[in-house]
Length: 361
Image (cartoon, rainbow, N blue to C red; front, side, top):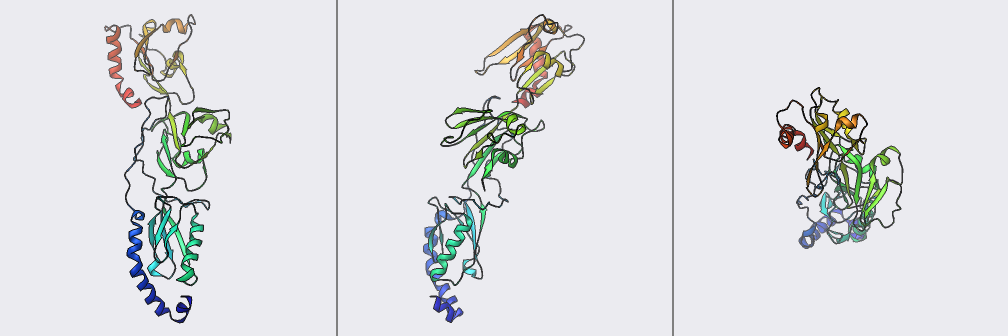
């Protein structure tokens, strides 16, 4: 065959066209599963409470459009879409194929070729060898990865751009959080104090370090503050394909009623807040505050609602111990001049406070 090419390029062109004509239908039939087809978006379930990572602001979770260049160690896998080009051979140029579930692709003349498990560079050499055996003289092949589908990582919760991201090279936890736009802010979804990583198959070889907690055989929890501010490499773990990275939402407490600045207060830098601290966040009482009649409105994890009386006067005078608020607690300070009493006054205050409550949930 190489002798035929060397004697007459025209004869080779006629032969190649004829060969493609009789082999292409069979190749197309074999590669029906390899054709690029749109995929339905996947749904990521949102955790129910603030103690779990939030998926607020999560867009449709298709893999982000890939403008990234794969690292030299990127391993091709099923569902990746690649473009193959053979220099100066129009019949073999701009071939776009999806790697099938069995890891193979189907190409003219050489049939099915194993692609999964190889780097793009390794696949390039393999194709040059196969086409060069009987069909082409010194073929020059290039490969471009158009879509990274084989190794997605889910980043959800309190990040700026939640979604699925391709793992195009070795990446650490901090690098993946950066890829997702960084942690959420007060203008989006403020991040909490921990990140939960779920991995199929578990963390068999991972050594637990301070600031890391195993929540189950396939889940670990990492302290975000310790990860970001101490730069502890033991916490900045390597991310694997199919990992789910969920950043928790910051806890919020509410102060309403006879205070100068009622509102929802995000606990970004403090794991807990006391009643005195919450009043300070609300810039203190109004002159008509009924301090001894304050209430903490609390919803327990099982949905049970409780009304806890609090005597703020005694707390501020140091006569009784300060009270720690839980996430989503509402501290209500009634107005001594109000004509409403008991739960009616609280209900009216919560109604005017509904904007904050809706935003928090």
